[in-house]
Each structure stands twice: as structure tokens, then as C-alpha cells.
Image (tube, rainbow, N blue to C red; front, side):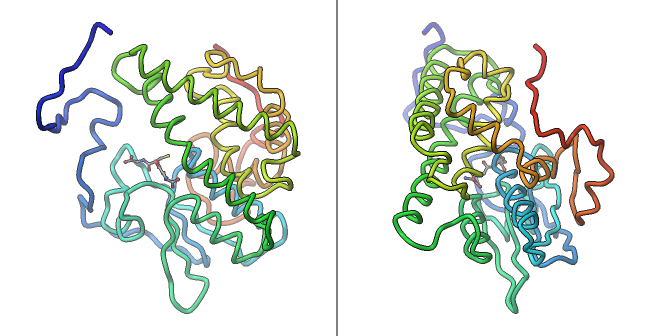
Amino acid sequence: MSDAYTPPKVWDYDPANGGQFAGVNRPTAGAREERELPVGEHPFQLYSLGTPNGMKVTIMFEELLEAGFSEAEYDAWLIKIFESQQFWSGFVDLNPNSKIPALLDRSGPQPFRVFESGAILVHLAEKFDYLLPKANPARAETMSWLMWQMGSAPFIGGGFGHFYVYAPERYKYPIDRYAMETKRLFSVADMQLGKTEYLAGDYSIADIAAYTWLGNLYHGAYNRADVFLGLDEYENVGRWVRAIDARPGVIRGRLVNTQSGLSERHSARDFDTLDKELFDPVRKRPDF
Ligand SMILES: N[C@@H](CCC(=O)N[C@@H](CS)C(=O)NCC(=O)O)C(=O)O
């Protein structure tokens, strides 16, 4: 590689490293601004953004409501991460890691926080006894695929997506490394989905978690990564993505905290304001 870097003895933080996250990410934790978060009327207060990690939770809420759990009503507030709202003191109180999604559960006498998308999925699944089997081996299988997804998403987003799209310049080594890893993860899912209809057998929170990432790439995220990575090769993943694409709860969940859908969601009626085409169960890849 031409642009080789000789690390100094002790690394020093360069705020002007040029990446798209340069204005946001720093090597320190904690609040940067004293600012409280709004609170709505529903038992669940979600502070999020319509990224794959954020959509896991809005899809779960909409799946619960679709299944008739009316106590799963939620307010979804928008956290603009490029405006550093994840560093507001109110958000940091809910998630010391300053990343969306974060949940405030006010459904019982004592409100409490839940952060990390996987923990939120497990919490909601257990609370409503939905999409997470109670008995083993089905529970172990579901938790295993969920943790597989939680552990591997950073290689797709922070690795492949970062170096292929967000980095100030393209470098072959990291793109090769994370393209390889992303394809390997698709291959893992494809082999499993050749044996079972959904990752852990029946549709579960593991599918919701993996779908937001694998489905997003499959449908052309990261400047048509589906072409760059040859994702049509994974036919079982394609079948699984299209089946999940068409679920009404998933369609609604994908629209929450997004620019093209609802920036915030406070009532089921909010969806009535949107263009009907947005609810089309067939997702289309963007034109080049
Ligand atoms: N492991 C976390 C990852 C969450 C995450 O990476 N969130 C991103 C958006 S997808 C974020 O808030 N980034 C803001 C930042 O890095 O400052 C989870 O699954 O909840």
C-alpha cells in the first residue's frame, strides 16, 4: 500500500481526520451538553434514528402492535446523530455509550433504561412473550443467532460501510478485508437459511436484528453494495429478505425515524399521513 502509516509510540487524537464522522466521534465518553429529552404519553419512549440498529427496535414495536399487543404503544423520538444529540445529557443518562437506539421503559412503577439494540429486543420479547421462544433448544438457537448478529454488525457497518463509503479516501486493504468479511457473513446466513426458513427456525428477534443489516445491503445500501459484493449469489438470503420485507410490522417499522417516512412516531395514525407507495411490500433497489 502506497499510503503506509508508521504509528508513533503513543497515539494522539486528530480531530480533523477528514472522515464523515470526524465532527461527531471523539475518544472520550460522556455528555457534551446539558439537555433533557422529551417524554411522550406512551409506556415506551424510544430515542432513535432510522438506521439498521434503530430499525430493529421500531420493527419490533410494530410487530408487537401488529400481533395485537396494544400495551406496546410507543413514542419514537428522533436523535440526530450528526448534530451530536446522542451527547445530550438526557440521552447519555439512557445510554452511556451515546449511540442510538435507547429505550426508557415506563410501563411499570419504576421507569428504567435499556440500551443496545439486542438488549432492547430481548427485553421487549420477554415482556410480551413474543418472537423469543421460552424453552431450549429454540431459545438457545435464537439467542445464538441474535448474538451472532450483534457481534458481526460492526464488521459490516463500521468496517465495510465505513471504508467503502464514509472514509475520506478509498484504500484497498480495509475494503478487501471487510468486503471479504461481509461476504463471509452473508455466506453463513445463506447456508443456515438453506436449512431453516428463518435463522433460528421460526421467525424471531434474531431475524429482525439480522434483516435490518443484511436486507439493507441486499437492497443496495452503501452505494449499491449489492452489486459490488455480488449479493444475488446468496439465494436463500434473498428469499428470506423478501419474506421479511413484506411483513406489515416490518414495513411500518422501517418508516419510523426516517426522512422519507415519519421523522417521529407517536401514534398508529401517524402512518396515515404517508404516501401509500411507501407501504409497497416489494422493495426496489435504487437506480445507479
Ligand atoms: N451496538 C449498538 C450499536 C449502535 C450504533 O452503532 N448506533 C449508531 C447509529 S447506527 C450511532 O448512534 N452512532 C452515533 C455515534 O457513533 O456517535 C447497538 O446495536 O445498539
